[in-house]
Image (cartoon, rainbow, N blue to C red; front, top):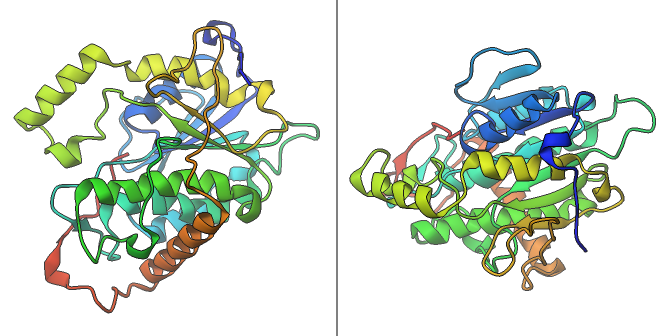
Length: 316
């Protein structure tokens, strides 16, 4: 199938409400600005508000590296009034393992587990107070779906061994699993996956070293060859609200070699072939167990506090 949403220049979002969890920086911030420009009411969630106050723009402070904060956000956020919830907060794992004070590896905490924590409270309420006849509410989960990346549900927290890109693979697989598991675990909204591909943002700073020479050179190169956050936002905002997604769920939209979004129409991609129902159940069970452990404040029995650094600042 091919989706042909209304071009951004002709899009009227004056009756729509968009929540962006992670919307204070990078792609989330660019998407917020485009939706605001088309008339939407936008609420952004993150640690630091980087924009000037504006009509129709609301900021909610939350440290998305902490599961207690994520659970509280899911329960307290006024989700009943919103049409779309978009999850964009994310980092790439550091070269040396970092963990939050809740004993969760930092990348999996910010980029994946916090989304599960928020959704448990937010999803059942999303869009419930809107007018009769409103379209089904939607949840979009940003990651890298369809790339064939599999995580390790047996070592989701990277405690048995640690390699940064393997740790990041746990978040990539987890976000794809969230979308595919939603129809059974999060009844109500329609769920969709987004994969922006290579874009110049701050997501690599944690891995490359924020402000390091390597970081600067890599981002400069990406800025030459890849799309900007603004370009991606102009393309994806119409998809968030297009009527063509009515009655559908579980679709993935991603920019990847050979399957780039086509000019004149956006084509969903196939999910990762190896992610079947058995894998989804294993992954979700491991994720829910890690979330419960984080909320209890107890480290793994096999965890050595001296084996890793600690960090609690979310990139959002």
